[in-house]
Image (cartoon, rainbow, N blue to C red):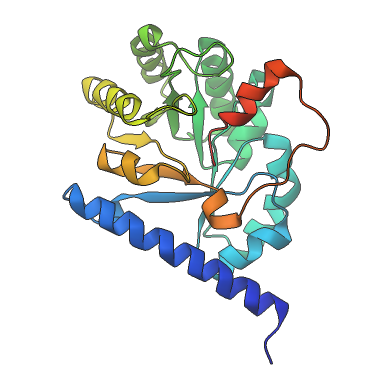
Amino acid sequence: MTTDSSIATQDAATRLATIQDEIAKAARLTGRTADAITLIAISKTKDAAAIQPLIDAGQRVFGENRVQEAQEKWPALRQAHPDIRLHLVGQLQSNKATDAVALFDVIHSLDRPSLLSALAKAMDAQGKRVPCYVQVNIGAEPQKGGCAIADTPALIAAARAADIPLLGLMAVPPADVEPAPYFALLAKMAREESLPRLSLGMSSDYETAIMLGATDIRVGTALFGDRPPPARPVPRSGLGMLRNSPGA
């Protein structure tokens, strides 16, 4: 007898297999294999029941935007599945650095000296080093987080001096424009800093991102389906933040 949970797992497995096939095709065109690309399933706004089918289908790397939301659902899921790796892809407040270091395996949003100091202090206190990406405001958008392009080399140097392990660079290009030039620019910046990884690409553009060097793609909608609209009207100043979320 087919149950609702088995149907959900089958659906999740189909979506996951489709994306994995597309990742493999794009990777081959760059002389890489699918193993070189990390698929981060962006599970923001999804509860444990919605996440479980994707876990059952074999996905083991997930991303969240908010520390508090992740704290509510992931401890129990990770207890049941200790091989899961959890990435923080959203903006991080300095006062949440201790919680982020305790919960996440990778942080993608190191973007300013004050956060660097908070993370270094938290890592020292907890006796662990959490690998990070420096987030770059690649489109110089005032409503979006990320380090200014001109300030990025100094932040990278400071992170290295503080013994924060750096994996690479992360960015979210401007919405509704061709992302390829922004992907290429971030790849150039990473090469200049000898950083091996690029956190780039979402549901709508991850194949392009892979073609231009992405090693980590952040896919939400293509795996989980469309997210519900906000419960209440969002002030106009906040629309860009929603539209340009780090994982979609």
